[in-house]
Image (cartoon, rainbow, N blue to C red; front, side, top):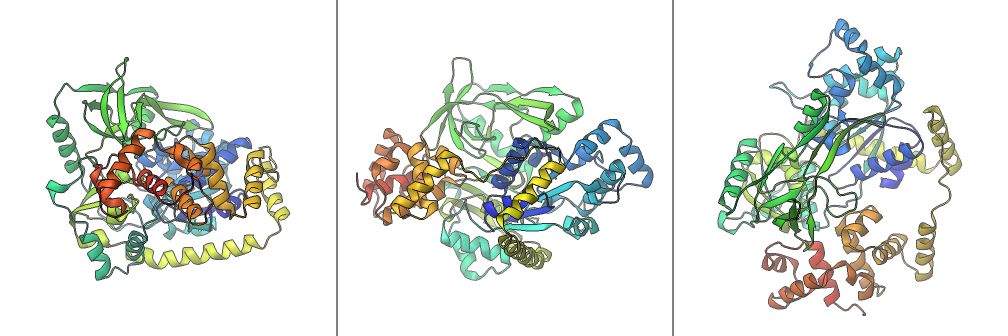
Length: 562
């Protein structure tokens, strides 16, 4: 199912389970749905299974939202006590749409407890008190924390069955475009790892002396991460500059934000420190996972970061907020950076990286290796220092369930595909009205979209290529083009390569995406390395520039008209 098809179904007000492989656009799709709800005057309740995931979406954990806290079970008296709390009852009564991110990490027991509170507060036997529930996640990724017990996934709960989810399984890939790497990831996901796949991974085994210094290291345990980050920072000359997190709001809410924030409460940096951005820039200057190096300090003492694509920017404090019904209940502010020498696999979930060093010799949880590997865009960006059997395993129970999810998604795709557009529009209109919002007719596209469609018609190009071409012409950077188009930067470059093969691309269409200084340096690297392959150039440049940037320069060197 495409993102557009899933979004159409989400807008009807059905309970939806939105899933798909890493990099398939789950976050992009749910953000588009949230934006549509808010444009219609409906404020969704955005929650997540973990604090880290909650900070990514500007919401709170489902535990906090429902009032269940750290409870592992609830008696009838507990349900009455929690439901009688004014602040809990108020937020649940005001809610219309409940979004639950990273549902794979939510246990069946937690789902049932939150459901019981909602039914009690809203005085109805309907699941979750009749709220529209949207569950988002991929069960092949990290499972629920089990505290020594066998993990029971949320889909095993009777409440999941009562919600009668429509499954939307996204099948497009926007992160990886390396066919060999996708083959390895698919083999892990399907439980069909063969010797060939193992050999492909082991070929990426790298000795410590050959590891790229700029790539983050992913570990299974926190102790390894803390030790390496502290040691690497200590090696640098100069004085440490410390940036302290500020906070507003109720202490308990602030503490939850601090635990989930990827930037530390006290961020210690030196000039020369390798860092990673921990938040998306609203202007598209960086994303969660962008790598760089601290090269100096601004006039007001803020770190200046040179990113791996050659850009320089000043990292200024940003806010992580906890919102409820459109109101900010608590916030923390910090420089959106962390040291990038090392981080846990758990905290990397949701990121996209050009390269990463991984020690998977101590992987202990199903899906841990799959999550780590799938953060990276290409196999050439994977640097393995260790690998055990568990790193290549996903939970066996999920293999069978995944087939069911795919089949259900295909059935939903067929059913909605056969509905007249006017019927779907009326379903969406009724949903918005029932939520107290104002429906906005989207039958007319914006002028910009119309222009792109006309452009495609006149050039005889497939719509996706025509839209990418126009987007690239209008954008000032590759990152901006990817954001406007709603795809990964690698997809933009892939479309440009297709346009080149069709003879429909000129240098002037995209040359502005690469700064002149960067262009010259990458050109020189191509001239001094054999062939036209990307990896030798990437390593010759010591990872300073992304593979996408190198591909753009290679495209200019090929037979593209001026």
